[in-house]
Length: 319
Image (tube, rainbow, N blue to C red; front, side, top):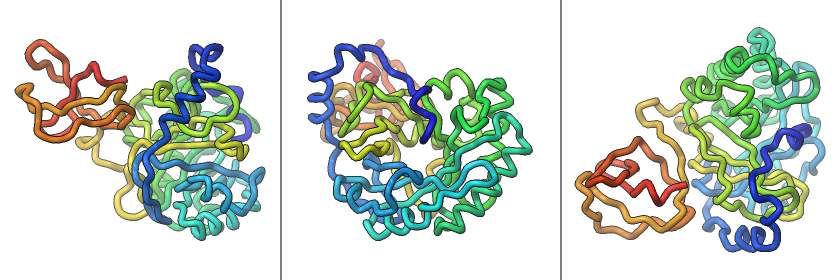
């Protein structure tokens, strides 16, 4: 995204996270996963592209990208001239294509609805059919004022996302972690569209090849994490999805609220226990594995997180 760099949260310890930090990142490459044009498993790597990148995404696929989020439109008068080629190229490379729209509606609900209609028409025009993900890219730039109040901004974003959903697409919200925390009532958005956040937060400036989950932007509703603007030296944004994504069937972002939880990452290997604190008989979950937690429980004086039916892990093992 064009203007996002000025808003990306630079996390603590940047000065010391140089040679040691990069080595740690390389050591934590995600597991190899299978991908297709309609779905990707959790912890898959992906890119997002606009007119500044090539219409040919083969180099990105060879480098390990499993999905591509293509800019389709901006405002109500701009359509990415390379979008059709980028969507088609993603499919040829067995990558799942998705789309995003750069918002200029500030906090106007009526303008947000007009932009949503334009984004939907643009997505269809460039080859993204209903059932695909279509994100609202909300950041400063091109006249978009992000300082109009957290609630009015959230209301406008939700109006955009509702239009997207009503058209059969799966809405996401892209923003930097700082904008999500300081300029939007993000809880209101997540309550309306669970697990719909695509958050940008970089541990360091410059090239990053693989995400370092020590710097994961932990917050409710995260589905995709954009961790660099120079992935593997290709001058393209690098992303990793925390949850599985699918352009067919029910969207992750549309999951019923009763099934929602918070994505967390393990900082240690962790055993799984039952509700009585007895260790269950299966392999320990590995460090940096992502889990979805559904509330806390105290067992024998220690805090645990529920991760499934009668499945708990110790809270101390999570970031």
